[in-house]
Amino acid sequence: MLERIREGSQGVWAMVILGLVILSFVFAGIGGYISSSTDAPAAEVNGDTISKATLERAYENERARMESQYGEAFVAMLSDAAYLRDFRQNILNRLIGEKLIDQAAADMGLRVSDVQLKDAIRNMQEFQVGGQFNNDRYQALLRQAGYQPNTFRDYMRTQMTRQQLTAAMFGSAFSLPVEAEQIFALQQQTRDARYAVVPSAQFEAGVALSDEDINTYYQANLAQYDTEEQVKVAYVTLDAKDLEADIAPTEEELQAYYQRTISEYRTPEERRASHILIEFGDDQDAAKAKADALLVQLNEGADFAELAAAESTDAFSAENGGDLDWFGRGIMDPAFEDAAFGLANVGDMSGVVESEFGYHIILLTDVKPEQTEAFENVREDLVVKLTEEQALDKFYEVQERMAQLAFEVPDTLVDMESELGLTVQQTELFTRNTAPAPLDSPQALATAFSADTIDSGMNTDLVEFGEHQVMVMRVVEHEPARTQSLDEVKQDIVAALTQQKAQQAAKDWAMSVLADVVAGTDVTATLAEKDAAWEEKAAVQRFDATLARNIIDKLFALAPEGEDKAGVVSLDNGDVALVELTGVNHGEAAEPAALASIQERMATNAGQQQYAALIEALRSEADIKLFQ
Image 1 (cartoon, rainbow, N blue to C red):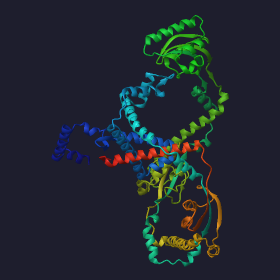
Image 2: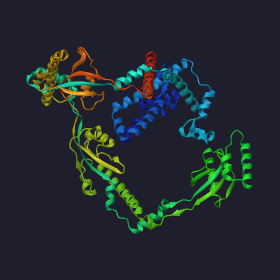
Image 3: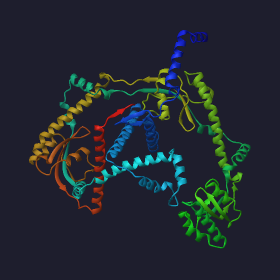
Image 4: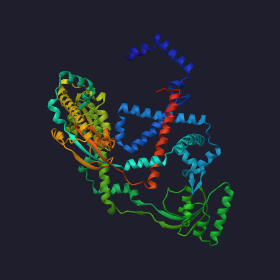
């Protein structure tokens, strides 16, 4: 075989193909083959592009936010290709809306001056030290966030320009006091009613169904009879926690572990110090001169706390005489830390120390020496930790053998049971939504329902379903999604159709009684014929939990007088209700604070509607191209 490949690569056609490839490198450049453009557009809005890099960054940010809020549930939702597609599309739609707003702001001539931009950045608390803008902190935070100063300024300018337009829209939205009063009155209003529930079961005897009725219903509701894909899985699990029961560390092992991890039981030295900080400001030499002058005063006997309160630019510590509380190594600026830990005795004071924040004078006020816990005091903790460590070592050893056996004997899990002592378990058929633990984890579900696992019927690779928990599985039975036949669901259809038609018959009957109710005729005897009776209910609220939602909705849609004072409504349980409004009760007048709150909410809702309407209007007139 290798000889054939060698001969083929030296033939005429191979040479021709190689020549074409070389020419393509010459004309297109090899860079086009080894890299892809990071600036490829995801969409174009009126000629302005939204790059795929921008879309990916927005996607990752939103995904991280959702995962932090909803955890594994959101990860499982993303495994659905349709949901993932919609999720990404929604993010792209949001980016398109932002681009349209930016373009509208530019067309309106909205601008942010350099002075406004500079003031906004200087006033951001993230960039301040002691209540003042600190350029070193500004630069450091930008580097952490992956920004250059010029790109951050561009980002801020865009955000502030966009905010001008949105603030104008939300600021112009309002609601009138009379509207708030009406809303409050409606919220506080209660109603008196009487209602009668007419059981649909009283009309089932008169329902007749034909084969055509049943088939028509079946064809109209085919999706309702689709089954979900199901699998039956055999699996073995390995959990590091289960291995701990057979582990008992020896005294020698505990002593060795103690020596190896003694740093965990050592409390490092901590120091407490006060300082006076003089920031560089615009004139670093002047700041140094001031710090030197303060040092002279201190050496001449000035009170450190009083001088710190009066002169230190670190406003937070200055309030406490410069006190910085306890700190250890690795907390403070390196230069500050070296000076503080270089002081020999409590009460010693440093010279002028330069750090990235400015010039410091440091006074050592207390010391906590390093301490180490004795072996006897931490023995129980050592047993727990060493047991966990040895269990993990055993876990990785057994896990490696599991992987080998899964590959070497791919059509059974029995060898793992006989050699490793793991129990082979088997499920019943389950869907993605009914998977038993531990197969209900996102990783296990994705593996169990993957085409490779189902088609091969062989052992899977190791699947992690928790921390230090793995499994190997194989699908032993698979039922694909399908539409059930008419014969399979005929009984259900007959029951559903019978209830549907019985409810309609009950509703028709109730409508015939409605005219008498509106006319004021006593229908008590008529209702009794269908096993129904009036029930009185006073002061019903809009969100009353003691009545069916459909009855409440109907009650608050009725008028106090005329033909609309009563009505008929279908209930979710298949029955029907005859509802009559008997009284309207008005609540007390609203307090000014309550009305103001309602007005504010209504204005906010109006602003949101206006903003959405603006984006929709801009989108309808925009030239938008999607490239993904």
